[in-house]
Image (cartoon, rainbow, N blue to C red; front, side):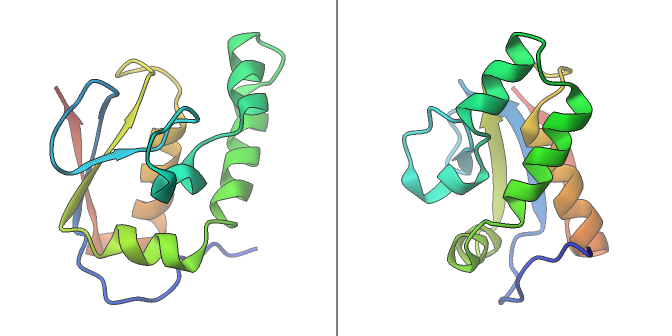
Length: 123
C-alpha cells in the first residue's frame, strides 16, 4: 500500500527532533504522555512503548505498527502540522536511540520528498 499525506496548503519545510525538555515555540509533543491533544495521533500506543521497553516487541514490529498508526492520523491533524512553518518533534528517547519520532521524520521525508528537509537534532 502506498503511503500518502493528505493534500493541503503546504508550508512546513523544516523538521527537527529533540528531547522532551526542548522548549522552542515549534515544539510538537508526540509522546504517549503528551499534554497537547492535537498531536496525540502521532504518539505510539502504551502497548508499543512498553513492548519495546520490556523487549517483547521487536523494532521491526514496532516500526510496522507505528507506520500503520501514521495512516490513521486524521486529515485535520496533518493539515495543522503541515501549516506550521517548522516543527520539532519531541520525545523522551535519547538522541541516537530507536524512536518513533525518527520513524515519523523518515516517513515525512519519504512522502514529501524535496518539499521538506530534516534539519537534525535540537538541544
